[in-house]
Length: 115
Image (cartoon, rainbow, N blue to C red; front, side):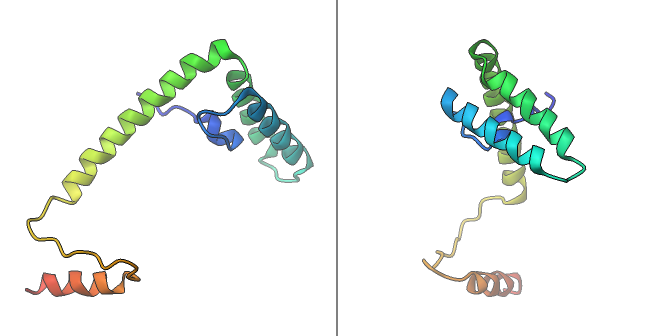
């Protein structure tokens, strides 16, 4: 499946955003991009308008949401398989000390390489 453009991310919204939140975020992004002197602003404005067109129409939003959830689930499954491949389960795990800065974990990992 091709990567689905996340229109919620384009507008800076959560998946459960209300129509009022969608409209407010759209208006804010349009104002920001119209005031922006960035050469990429017209392309971003087109993306924002496309996101608004889909998310503001309930008839288009419902199928889009289903497609987005399916794509995210497929991506999560792919990364879970990759994570399992890269980090196979070990029989002995050192408990992480709550609040550790991470350097102790790095030292422990290096120590385990040589033992």
